[in-house]
Image 1 (cartoon, rainbow, N blue to C red):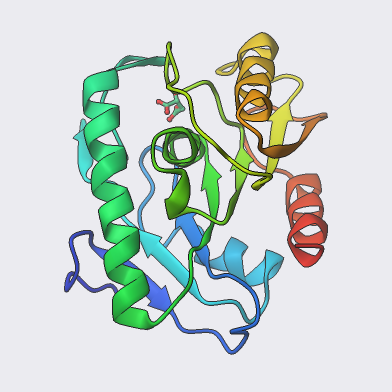
Image 2 (cartoon, protein in one colour; image 1 turned 90 degrees about the horizontal axis):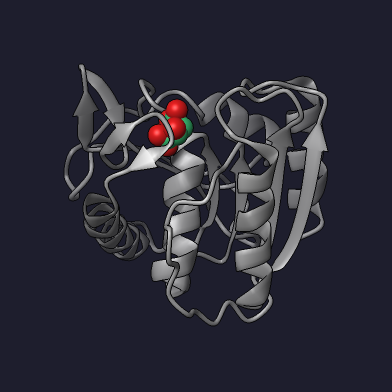
Length: 206
Ligand code: MLT
């Protein structure tokens, strides 16, 4: 299993042995890359196929999935373009590797692009685990999420994501028909054992 650049995003692909369940699309945080969440994916969904792209935007050398103007203030034109590119990559990877629509597992910036995918390209994902997400778009378009399962895990002491912002994202997704479970953990922006446990239990029930 190595990093490849044969598709539109540099990525890693782990074939897995479990073809009964949807693959996971791993989306790293700012400064991460395609290697970051492989271990987490193997821990929370043993045996599943894993697709892990690297974000194409560089912020002072740190990969991200879309540009931001400052912390928590997003370049929404770029976000829309990058979400469309990522939806294209998912379609390419599904074809190349013979997979169905993945469940996204995104952390921080990766959770935010996953939320944007749900709102802008809902057909690209079978569901999503959003770890420390925030609202990606000021005026989200109408979307039909048709009961798509979404787990959101926020941190009660997160210095980057205000509780009201995460709550607004849960509302927006529910209004569009997603089946959202939103938990706030005793944590900051970083991930904890509770994130791993809750994600594993939730994914097992899909
Ligand atoms: C973002 O830019 O997506 C959020 O501020 C989270 C982060 O990456 O720090």
